[in-house]
Length: 230
Length: 264
Image (cartoon, rainbow over all chains, first blue to last red):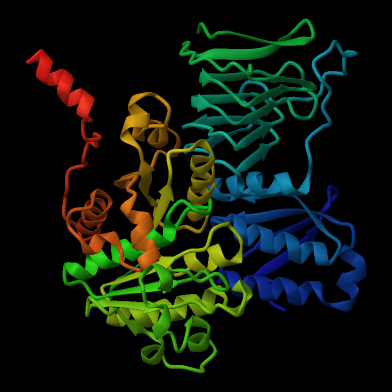
């Protein structure tokens, strides 16, 4: 056992696992060793894990390995605290752990109790890249993309989604049920656009629109797109 | 100086990975580079057929990995170009016969002897694809000007980036200038707009490719084929030579020429 490499701490919210310095392989072996102790088997089962990764950049493949390791002991990874790249990787992997809130087609819905959503100054994730087909980002706050969101990609945020580029993939703002969320893009041409519990798709006779920046939000029970004036 | 491993991949099948691998290999070897082409499509091998070397296979990639043959024994020397070699895939085995570590080791060994190791990746994004990407120093993505091919290429570019490899280079294959002109086919700009990666070559549609692949005689061996010339330019760019990109125009038909004659 080497607590320098992997340390465990119980908190009110769940279990915090902190990764120390060292080779990734070493860390994974240490984690496996700690989790395979007989008392750990019963103690950790069902725990929700907060992972602290420090300055280390962890990629998607490594996170998937870690999640698989945890789930063998009946644990789920609920959040990650660390470096920007690690957080982005988690947002990508997270989509495979938890599905977003169920959707209904656009129709007036009973007002919900306003969920707690990130507003000004709250957490946002910045993706400075092209989000490509097959990539899926899911984040609990607002997502800002500097770059394009290509067809076949999905961006899901509990808050707003802003794309400084072409938005052509599937986008879901207010994914936890917030109908007040908005989607904005320099070129707003998503395959499908979802806000809260509403859903809209691109018209089938897709003409080449080159409108300036546009913004989509829910008005009177349907998704409305309008030009984005400051 | 060790050589470099270049993996040729696409996601979608049938866009010309194998033909491109064979032709780039030929073009590089014609320029005096030592080249090893490696067929990573285990179970569905093709590269040997396209290169016309099928009847010379004794050992294959899996034999080398499992220690039944030495690398030297399995490498087939091309019948036309002395610098060109092929390491064929096994036909009777499955993709799971090798893993990423073994592919890396194999390519590390090849890099010591060759200037270029070209890996012909299988279609798809499963284990065979991962095995092909793992050893790559550089990745080339092939795309045809079709929406489905571009979509798959986009997926593959994302996966290559997730593997922390350098951003891939792009070949647009089977471009038909007249169809582009009529607005019936995606043009180069449309493809680049989505993929946003650097272009390393445009290969026009060329009927000669079909006969040449059937005969096992890559077009890059000759000088008068348009597609062959395009592969020559790609080889030069891989060697660090700057070659301007060609603007393809189909030769004017008889009617066009007649009309031009009338107009003076």
